[in-house]
Image (cartoon, rainbow, N blue to C red; front, side, top):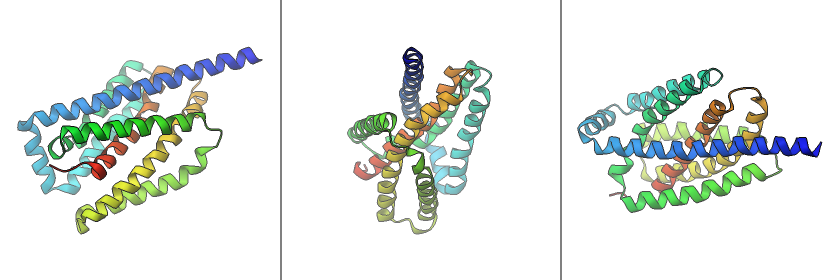
Length: 231
């Protein structure tokens, strides 16, 4: 019996290691794609100018298009690793448009500092979520409620209030929320693994890494907003 448990633990460790590898690669790809778009000013400047004039429509499209690729990614996960991988990259490429403004608004020093803080916080919270014996699933309702509230308040502030102080408060709350979500999603990897026995675990690991990639990106953006000095 102990031998069986060791085999299970080893397989779970392999799966989670693959998820974290994809997470790191996904974050790197997102940053590079956003940077490449930012350097292509002939494309991004008119796009961002249009987005500034049509903020609500731009936000909807910037979220809806990546979600389409994410949906395809989840659908293909049970069938084909290759198609899952292609949709995964397409999702990150489409989502990278939201990262373009940081390369115009913040210095390289600010970006690197925020990345370092985010990486340290991510490692700590992911490690906690994975090893803790506490059932973090009880956090789900609080985290989801907080996330919905932040999205609503952010939209209202973007459209109506346009308050800098409100933005700082939103960034602080967002930071706390995504620290919790990193721990929650890390613990949830065990549940995903045990529910996916017999499936294409490589493709499942790709899909599972999406939440952690999004957690990191949102944490990074909120920390950059809090501690970065706008150019």
